[in-house]
Length: 395
Ligand SMILES: [Zn+2]
Ligand SMILES: [Zn+2]
Image (tube, rainbow, N blue to C red; front, side):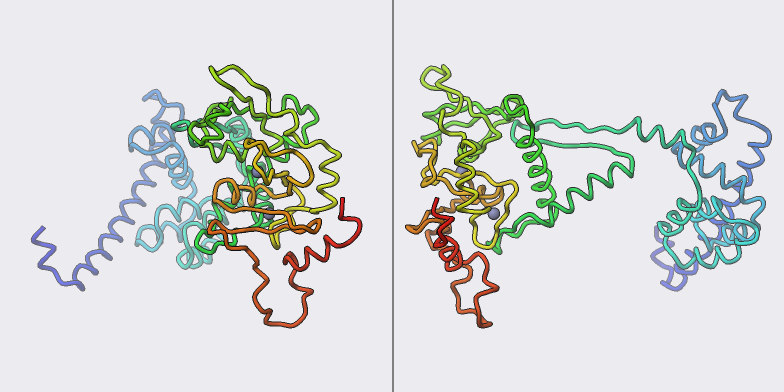
């Protein structure tokens, strides 16, 4: 250790340069040895399936990397420029392995200069594009596709999966498009990350799939709650698929038409499956659609993924009628049940007021506008009153 501490920075830098060249030279010799051993079919005597398997066992390397070494060892014999670049440490072994996948004696001079100036990822991408994987590998990827989930601690669902690139691209595109469209939180201090919005997108996509399912009896999320515990916020709800939900969340789910709440009374016996009037019938939905259009949160207007929220909460006896229901999207529904926001219907039909957890009215467009004219202030309470005053909306 003392040897290094006594050397100057310039000396150590030179040392590193020399070591890099020695390393390059060793790697070139390693590839040349592999090529010669392969010609002698050495793997057959050692019970290996092929040369890559033999190298993997001898060098304690992965099958994948060993396969690359064996292929590069063969290719490099006809590519003197790449061979030289490897031995003088000008190109790493990884870059050489990628380059030899597509370089030819005619192109190698230009490719060496190019590869020195770009990242390994760039070289690999060009190699991937210039070559075609064996169809067996494509089939193996397809066979390995999977999606698994499990509850951790009864509170969190973990998802883990693997998809071939083309199928994965479909999933990624759908989630990205939806994450872009989902509404955002007005509270700056709780700005959601892109990851959180993708998670919301997956939930929204799944809710819509359940809502669109013609077999509504089977396409339901079942939640078991104790009515007394729910109203007193003293007990949790249990999801039939596994998982426990906090009473505030259970209350949120009671507004949800895709969740069927199985209500238990004293002694645990079933009081009923939801309250008969809880699920909003289609004729009432039509009136809500006419009155609210979409989510009533100022500026949101989402039309898909909306729920009919019970203003006077359902579990406290709130009725399922037009005066007690308001359309909210999944995101703004959570604001009410979980984050303490409140919503009220105004005296005039269609007017909806939102209040922050500190009881302050949320009127994002009440501040004096910087530009004159109200056309741009969609979603303001003023605008809602105008809409509400139109005859068709007074359902
Ligand atoms: Zn609700
Ligand atoms: Zn909304």
